[in-house]
Image (cartoon, rainbow, N blue to C red; front, side, top):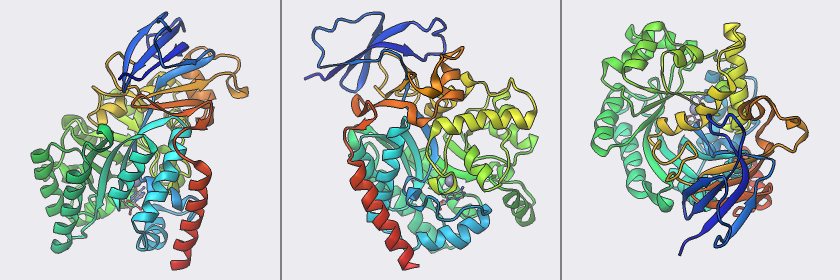
Length: 433
Ligand SMILES: C[C@H]1O[C@@H](n2cnc3c(N)ncnc32)[C@H](O)[C@@H]1O
Ligand SMILES: [Zn+2]
């Protein structure tokens, strides 16, 4: 039994669609089955008329902590160090699986509404996050945030927890969930933990998700402790490889950029979080010039304070322009690739998602250009999406061939119920402090 959806009259944002031709796209079950000027409407189960709408791949957020959506607006205007130590970690001490489930569902509502269909997460109670992903219908790469602070017993338990997550959730939800290792960072995970993770990642063919070189303090502490900058240290212990997604990468020497390139490490750029925590500006245009794979992430909603990837891309683009004083860097076309094919490559999913091609998964969004902030049409589709739009212009979201939002109405999740439960959860968590 095939489930077929025909989307017609769509302006497909393929970077080679210079003429802005309207096209039709046929979805069969979970896959893109056909793309053509016209497709027979006879036998399809559902027709979506995308007149005036831009069609693009579902966006990919390569670094977030979805359950932290509960902590939105909890602690603003702080440095990373104080934000984590004085506010976030004390709140996280009282988390449980139910709180993480509702936080992840709240995040999923926001992702679906703003056009993200895949996210890469690092957090706790990840089996509950997996449940939220399954219920929401989205796609995810999940990792457990391993922190051992050099304690050998804790190291074993943390690794066991992440391996257990792999065994119970990898391939779950019709293959929409993939599991990575999530050593939190080189300052919270010991050398022994990182070395063990490298061995196990090779053995199980799992990717690795880690925070690296986010603040100047991290660099200075690393130099004080080991005489090496973070990427120099990670290279020395044999940790780096093409399966490593490093979030932030703000403070990089030219030698470290060489190291990243040599090992084909994937960079996840998180400009809003880096600006809000005053961490700094990642040298993204230099990384791109060096052919390094740079994708985009929001980080958690608690340091952003939203999960709107279109807003994140605009910020990324403008921030590079102002930091290099060159308006030509990080164009809207480049920005689009960061949230699509580069994101897919970072997660090892480039054969499944990240572009609109026959045979790929039907992860598709439509953006309605008949909106005050998108009229008249820009010189290119990518310009209209990156510079003029924001997440609330997303009109339809489809993941794995299933419609999760149509005409701005969620079809699977009950958003009001989730908002109510999330408000109750954060109230309880604040009372527990
Ligand atoms: C998985 C762990 O990562 C923490 N976390 C969330 N955001 C950041 C960030 N920008 N830098 C470092 N750690 C972070 C979470 O609060 C959790 O403790
Ligand atoms: Zn983070």
